[in-house]
Length: 70
Image (cartoon, rainbow, N blue to C red; front, side, top):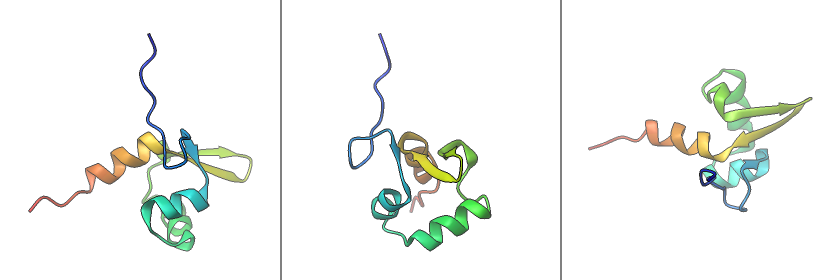
């Protein structure tokens, strides 16, 4: 039995920069900056040559780890 995969807004496991931008409601330039400065962990990023893809399950874990609890 395989574990259930977490899928992104388009039903995919991996999303591109445009989809991630919409998913996080952030400009693409911010995401590129965060990738270069390693603010987004490498566990979230998959590289195919120069193309970046992002693992939705890892992005969700990263976002949840940064929640502010009041």
